[in-house]
Image (cartoon, rainbow, N blue to C red; front, top):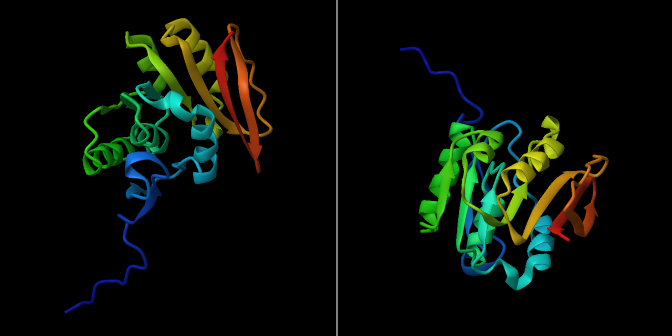
Length: 194
């Protein structure tokens, strides 16, 4: 009888994402191993949610390039009212659904579509929108233009941007940067209306 070849790693290998604050603080969730999938680093998330402090409670959240769902899951753990996760990749979207089920977060939902498609079809408005696209795709400016055209940010809402430190992004009026930090080669910004 022939022996099966030895596999050094299972194709279904998964890494984990840790929730760093709120109700589910310390919980670890499996995330699919997919090329280009990178959860926002713990320290970066800590900075972002320190900026938001108690504002996050009862916010409606849009995680526009959800990936692992790290930002939206963190927001829900910290008291956000609801979160929509937009993610076109099937395995990544399924991973977010599993995480929502594991944490018993029915106020989260996943839309399996491209961000631009979501922006042209949604009628919902949001208090906090996460814009953290794949760094190689250079989607920041077109996404901000799409957000402006869709008019889905509430009057007192925030947009979170994460990009390479060297990336130049034109921030369209009426938004302005209210918080800005660089960590290594990543720059994070919080935008709000004037």
